[in-house]
Image (tube, rainbow, N blue to C red; front, side):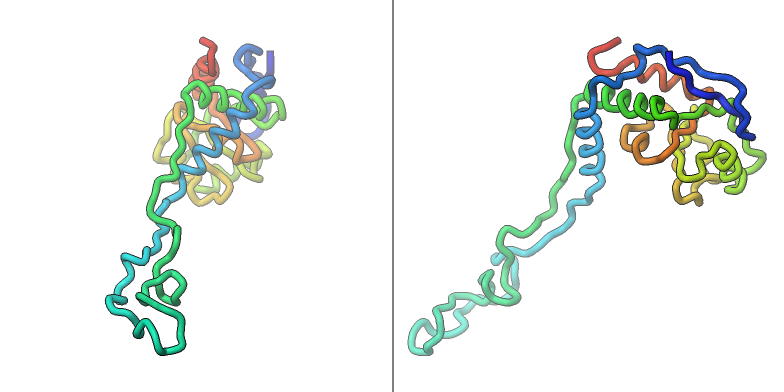
Length: 213
C-alpha cells in the first residue's frame, strides 16, 4: 500500500489516502510514457508551413535568354530552384503531424506517470477545494501552504467556473478534470494536487491500465 497525504486548504495534514499496490506501476511503462508524450506533442504542431514548387511560382513562361551565343549557361525558366525567387525543392507543405497510440498503451503511460509522482512524494490530496470567490489570490495562497507554489497541476472532480477563473492567471498552474487529465500534464508540473472527490475517478482509470482489469 502507498500512502498519499490528505491536507486541508491551510496545508494541515488531516489524514492519508491508501493506494493499493496493484493500482500503481513502476516496473513497466517507461516506453509507453515516451510514446504518449511524443503523440501529444506531435498533435500540437499546426503543420501549416508551406513553400511553392517551381510549378506554383509566378512568371517564367519564356526562356530568360536564347539557348546559344550569349556565353551564359543554358536557362529555360526563372522558376528553376537554382534561381533566386524560384521554386523550392522538397520544401514543407501543409500536413498533419498527428500520431496515434494504442488505448492500452495510453492507459499504461498514464498509470506509470502517476505512479512515479506518488513514489516521488509529488502528489497531495486536498480534502475539499472551496473558494470564497473566483480570485487568483485564493488559489495562490492554497498552493503556497501546500508547498506547491513552484508549479502544480490541479486535478478536480469536474471543472467549475470559479476554479478555472481563479487559476488561469497563474503561470505555472493548470486545472484538469480527473476524467480528462493525461500523461503529459502529469509530467509537466512539479506537484499534482488532487481533490479528494477526484481520487475515485483517478483510481478507476488506474485499474484499466494496459492488459489489466
